Amino acid sequence: MTDRADRREFLESVGATAAGVLAAGYSATAKGFAANETINVGCIGTGGRCRRLMESLRTIPGVKIVAVCDVWDTALEAGKKLAEPNAFATKDHRAVLDRKDIDAVLIGSPDHWHVPLTIDACAAGKDVYVEKPLTHDLSEGTAVIEAQNKHRRIVQVGTQQRSMPHIQKANEIIRSGQLGDVLKVHLTWNRNSPRAQRPKDSTDPKSVDWKRFLGNAKDQPFDEYRMRQWRWFWDFGGGIFTDLMVHWIDVVHWILDLDHPQVATSVGDWFMAPGLWETPDTVQTLLRYAPAKDRVVQVYFEGTFSNARNGSMVEFMGTEGTLYIDRGGYVITPDRNKKLK
Image (cartoon, rainbow, N blue to C red; front, side, top):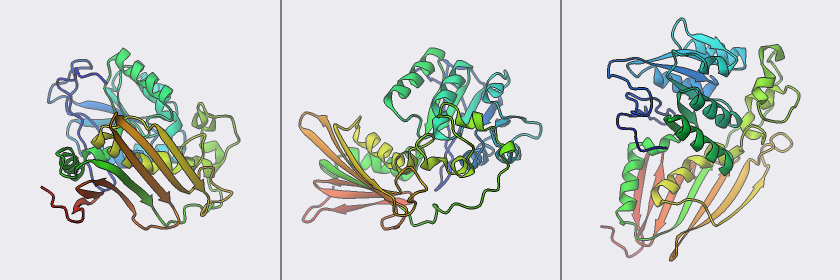
């Protein structure tokens, strides 16, 4: 992103499950807005996550949801209920991007659509809030950055934990050096939930524009379970890694100024969803970073849907103590025989 945003301010309405969404002011590189002007937003991919973000949007003065888009009639109708009374509704995202009355878009589509929608939105002159994960590989990220810079747009990705006040405070504590040298980080996202049950199909295929849903994914017959549980299939999502691990690894990268690991290894198994999910439901991942010549950081992630031990959390382990963070707060524990400042 550029640093030329002298008036922008993306506002987050952050809670345990809601992310902040849109701006109260735009940069000189985008369309200029006076403080009392209305920002018109189009929402693309109005499934469950997007609708929760739309509920947050509705609380921001001066923001109107004037268009909604989804490939499934049921999700489209649900999105219309959260938009302006006469909001434009369509299954074709291009019809939203072509509208001159829309200033920005909120993208809540399945993951495999995040990159093409963001690039198309930038090219159409719209600023963007897009859900995580933005991309599935580095080359896709480069394409998004090029589009954002070329068209001088604002793009924000929905890794909302950076906006949580207690995590911002934890960031300050770690950067102050109170933990000493942080050498290891442990992060988890463990649940015990029956997600792998496949109910009887209840969706009329005619109510879904399946070709649009597939987008750049390989052609395949309509499958209601894959459409509604797309996170667990490689054509559309990345399983535990891109749905859950991404939240805490983003915090780790941010706080420790990490870029990419030198070494990465993972093991995955299917204890809850064998024969149903493509992505593993239980994983362990070890990452080794070398951000400086004399500095190494080991990061270990575990995630499962078969046991909720440790829940969702991250622990920064330093030579002076450990800082534990979850979505409710943080706790500092001095190491044995150590006194934190």
